Length: 221
Image (cartoon, rainbow, N blue to C red; front, side):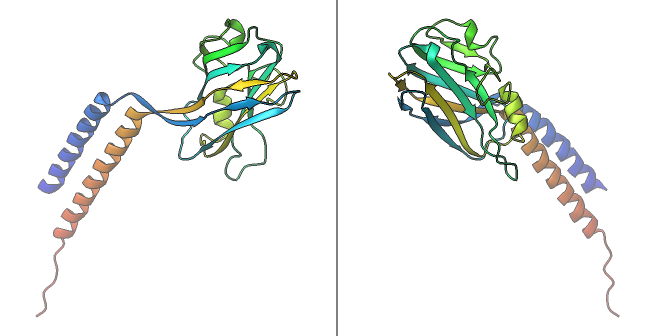
């Protein structure tokens, strides 16, 4: 009994220590995937820029376009399509970031798309530096309204090939710079759960050893 109580005390101490560790830990981190972009084909041809993602639980989704230059952003269409879920149907889960005929100017610079944005990019001004929500299902093949909807559709796992689909509808084309896909996750809760699980397993093992030690083994006569 004394050993069991001691083990339980250690477990509670470990839980408190885990809480202290998670409090001091960085509040969030992220899986980060990049594509260096390239030239945009002309005459309405869709350009695909891919991200091969693995091991990323989808708590949130953020996408940053560091630079994009075209003759007129009014002729630009940008979509983000997630991977096919494991065991799921061959279906494109797509969110519209930029719809045609909605922007002005010629460039995007450090444009971040996130559900934390206060408005869609339509509410911004060129070169649209800042944080914006996706435009959702405003046109084309988009079938989801937000990144949150995309995470739900994918079963909260990001493993697979993501596609940023960019179309410049004139005969001139343009250039896309580096694009970053970030999948943030809560470092505090993750660390806390790992520590708590480790401490609890240790406590149960100590309980098991104590129980085995108390068993009387008959001696042969």
